[in-house]
Image (tube, one colour):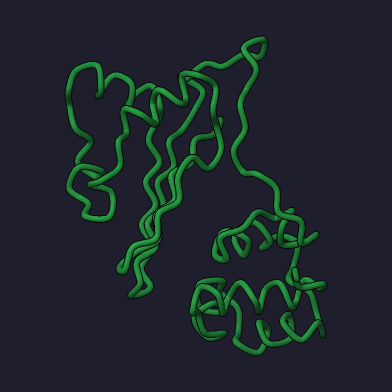
Length: 166
């Protein structure tokens, strides 16, 4: 059953990610006591930090606030403008040792790199990303699929591949 309050959702997601209150507080730039007050429903996080908090917990702001999980992936109908030059490839690698690597690459650059047979160093040299077929991801995007396209959990890292508009 889904936790019923924002505090319970924060606590559940934090624990699911095997993160301490102290670690979450450090990532958010708040005190561990603030995180504790959120989780015990004594206070709510400031609205300005909700996007970062949701990201750190691996959820959307809507999921954080409402508890409702919806698909993060959608298909853009062909009738809508679907220009790759207005899109970014977001790669997020959350390593088990607590480090997070974020790579944002314009999709037009990814497209040109594949057409020319050039590898993107940030992608091709990463152990966590080595098994991902980025050509298939490019094909999905060309067909109109956007949002969170892939989520991989390995023993060492959690990888998210997302495509969205700039």
